[in-house]
Image 1 (spheres, rainbow, N blue to C red):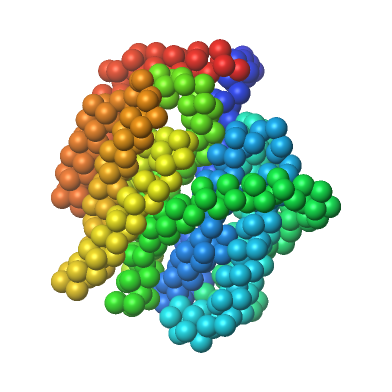
Image 2: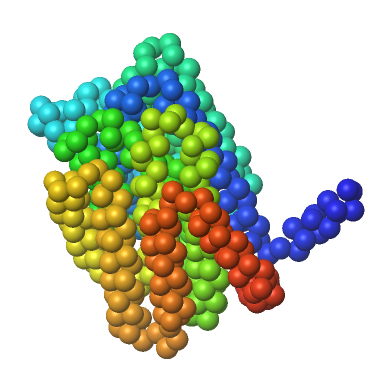
Length: 492
């Protein structure tokens, strides 16, 4: 046994830093999302289906309001600025914190002025919004800190801090709803309060007014850059979250809270696989930026092909085996929502493709292109959701969202090609034939799976077929991973 662990340790030690970071960020995200996944059945038993549905809607509003309250400057503008302003990291970070907090305060004032209309539309208590505002203020420095650590592949401290935050924000609300009331309001309020307290030290650490005053000209320059870069991405982020969250909000408005609960639970199960692509993208976005900065387009293409195959294969397997897990974990009253899982899970694959194309557009500063596609896709999704729910049921939202993900990914692909052409990129950073060929396979597996989802025999025949294909091509897969590993090791 000690010899076995010795081999594993040597293999791990020989990994380049980038690969180790991917491994640990993936493990961390699995633990983070896994804890939420484990807690989900507990909340479905603690809260009524109506309250659970209400909790999902409030959480969706929190995500959407964050876009207006922060512009999410800690994402696009800060991530790109880390490379652009590498010689003045501290002042740049303080500038991002400052403008984000100013935007938050302005947004909060506007909401308070029109609070009656706000409460009437969202059905959210104004006290909950004020707590959210505090969270938005404190969260930006925390997110900037995590982003910089990911750029540096400093995964150890990020993993530790993220796990602590995950444990407290998922487990403590279970206690608060037992003490203060089994309602969506208590659950969401306690989660946001805990997260705010956790982020507070990062805000205090970054609050250096003397540095801002000493470097006023640079601060103004950085703020101007951030606003110009990020403003189109506000429309993109809003559209992206409309694609992800509008279905639950519309089900709540056009149907009822119980159906929101059923849809949300199935959606949460399906989105577990999203952990893989999110984990990889969190590490690979800075990696991809650095490779593009060096004009190493071949490495971007090679690693993208490997990841498309790995992520796509995992999604197919997950989609085919998850019904049994769902039935074991959830009350039987939720079984009606099982049919939501195949389209939502397949949508995760096209979300992954979209991140590859958008990262390239974003690197070259074409944020307006990103906004055009995202706004169109979100508008189309809302229209299709409305028509689908009018003539069919709440489940149709999963299918309309998948259609919009496919369209969005393809349009971003076209704009990525346009971006590369405008910037005279000599070698394509993606492989269109491989990407869209694999996408066709994904859609075929989804179609068969959706039709025969009740047949465990047919589903598991597909599972064995996929595993057989992986086994037959194992040497090609291993060689591809070794190639990626070799390139990364040379860089490090």
